[in-house]
Amino acid sequence: MTTALRRAAHWHRPLMLFVSAMAVLAVISAVGVLVDPRVLTGAPIWLKPFKFSVSFVLYGITLAWMLSLLPRRSRTAEWAGTVIVATSLIEMVVIVGQVLRGTTSHFNGTTPLDSALFTVMGASIAVLFVAHFVIGIVVLRRRIADRAAAYAVGLGIGLSLLGMLAAVPMVLPAQEPGIEGISGAHSVGVADGGPGLPLFGWSTTGGDLRIGHFVGLHALQALPMLAILLSRFLGTRLDERTRVRLLVIAGAAYGVLTMLLTWQALRGQPLLRPDALTLAAVAALVLATVTAVGVVVARRRGAELALAA
Image (cartoon, rainbow, N blue to C red):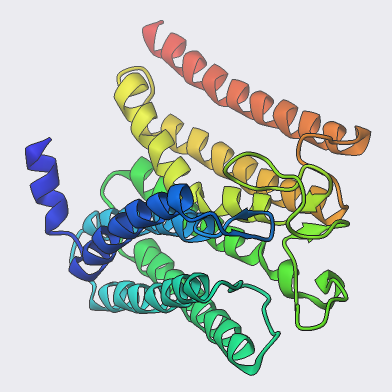
């Protein structure tokens, strides 16, 4: 463990410093949730900084680890990582600053200052998207030795971009709630701030675009974690080619799930109250995924039997 921590300390320095800062902010925000009685849009006012800081801890450390896997140093990727740190800091400064002012950071155009801050946040997120995309291109060009790890990293980066795009409908004209000064919403069919799931706050009475956004973003961790688990527990039973095929299937299913959750939200449907059409789509996704996995495993066993004969 100590060796791993020392190694991690030498990963992309700006990203690791940012991760440390976000970890501290997560603790401060957690304390704020407990001791600050203020509520904003139906949730403790410090809950948003807490969720964003935890998310950025995971995001930053995952990106730094991915950059450490590159066979040789890439200045382009390192600069892109530094740009991500800068844009993420801008977003967090706005979020925390608005909490200290006792108002919302997202979709807030009630005053010229609030409108300007939300515009700055939007611009910083757009720059982050481009920098994230650049890292993805570098990862694809600089081939990682372990093919399974390479596919997991590439799929994770690509699907997390899809997760970012899943947030775009939040600021489209259709999401304007008709309230002066508010230029978007997380929820569909109901007002933001209504009943929601514990901690996440996702609406339980209408659609919520944060769900697909959340799931897509965390492909960055989910796909590499799957690759690690396949290697650790099935590495002696599955060859590299089979593990790669399973990762491709998992990535395809994950991407479809992200789009399915966004589609469900756009129809104004709560996550835990799917209609027959949504259930049919989920069933089709599960069936297709299980069938594809079965075919890959069957081929692997068939090859083993042929060799044994």
